[in-house]
Length: 180
Length: 368
Image 1 (cartoon, each protein chain N blue to C red):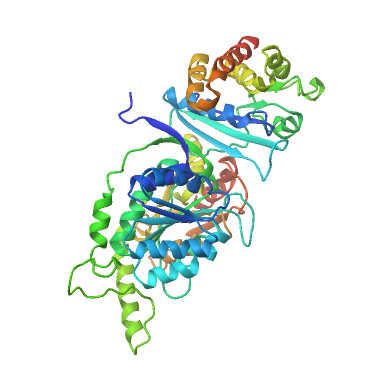
Image 2: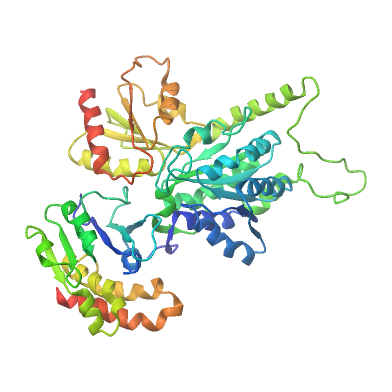
C-alpha cells in the first residue's frame, strides 16, 4: 500500500463513543481533501455490547472499507484488545485505554500508546470524553491529520443540540494529543 | 477546491438523496436492517418537498401502494432487504405484467429465511431472473459505492419510466452502511422529473374526466384471459426485455494486459479492487470486470475480453452470477471448463481484501 494510505479499527463498548470518533475522523479526512470510508460493525446490540468501526484514509479511491490486519487501532476496552491486538499489522500502532485495561495484557512487541483515557476525561470534567482523548493520542502517534482539522470537523459531526460541548471535546482531543 | 462540496453520508442516505433529487414523489416501506436509513431519511426529505412518505403495515402493503402510485404515473419507490423483498414479489410480477414503472431497492442481508443482518449477494437470482411468478424481468443496477447509490437512483427512475418496468437497485449491507464522500449533483445521464411525467402522460391513471370529454378509458392490468391475448402480451414483454440490452453497463479496471480477469459486482467488486491493486504492485497481470447492470447482463462486453484471458468469478453467495458468466462465454472459441473459475464468500461475513488474495493467486498460478 502507498504510504499515504492509512486505516484504523476503533473498538469498545457501545456508549463509549466509538462510532462518533470514527465519524469525526472520516469527516476530518474528507475536509482535508482525502478519500475516506467509515463502516460500522455491530450486531443487534445496544449499550454495553461491543462495537467497532473501520476508517480508511487514502489519496486514491478506496476499494475495501474493511481490513483484516489494521495499520492502527484504538482500543477502549478489554474485550476489544483480545479481539484486535492479535490482528494489528506488523509495525502497526495501537492506542490502548489504560484506565480499563490491565497492562499485563498488552503485547510488549506491539507499538502501544497506553493512555489512561477515562481518568484524563474525568480530569477534564466529563467522563464521556474518553473517546476524544484516545483519538487525540492516535492523531499524535500516526500523524495522519493535523489536530486542528479534526477539532474543526467537530462542528459538522456534533449535533447542534450539543454544540455547547464542542469546546471541551476539542480540548479533550488536544489533551490526548499532548499525552503521546 | 472542489466544484461541488462533498458530503459524508451512508450509502442508504445516498439512495434517499438520489431518489428525491431524481424526482421521486412517494415512498412506501416497512423497516428492516440493513436499509433503515433509507426510510429514515425519506421520512424527512419527502414531506419537505410535498411528497408522500408512508410506513406501510407490511411489505405486501408497501409494494401494492407502490403499484398504485406508479400506475398514476408518479415516480415512486420502496426499499427493503432479503425476506422483505421476497414478500414483495407478487406485486413486482403484477407491475411487470401491467407495464408499470417502479423503483425497488434491495440492500441485501444474509439468507435464506431470516438469515442475519450481515452483507450478502444471495438475492442475485431473485433480482435478475424475475423473482416473482411468470416470465418477468427487472432491470437491475448494482452500486458499489455511496456515490453510485446516489447516481443510480436517477438511472433507476429514468429506466423505469422509459421501459414502464420495475427497476431494482441491488446493494448490500456494506454499500448501505458505508459512509463515504458523495457529491450531491445530478449525474450526466439524469432525466428531469418533468420528463418522467411527460413519459407517463400517454398511459397513466388520471381519474374520470381529467382528459376532457370523449377521452377513452384507460386500463392497466396483468390479466389476459381471451384466447391468444396473454401470448400477445408476453410477446410485447419479450421485445421489451430484448430492447433493454442497449442499457448494459459495466466497468473494466486493468484488463488490457491481464491474463486473469476477476468478475465481481457491488461491494465484493470494490474489495476485489483493493486486492488487485496490491497484486498489480507485485507485478501480477490481473484485472477486474464489474457488471453494473446485472440484468441485462453485459455478456458481449465480457466476451470481448475472451482471447487469452481466464476469469475468476467472486461473489458473496453459493454460486449465482457465475452461471451468467458461463452462459455469456458458452460456445465461444477456445472456451473450456477451465476458462471460468468461481470463488464464493459465505453470506453474512464481513470480508476484506486480504481474504481474496489467496483465491486470486491460485487462479494466477493456473493461468501460467
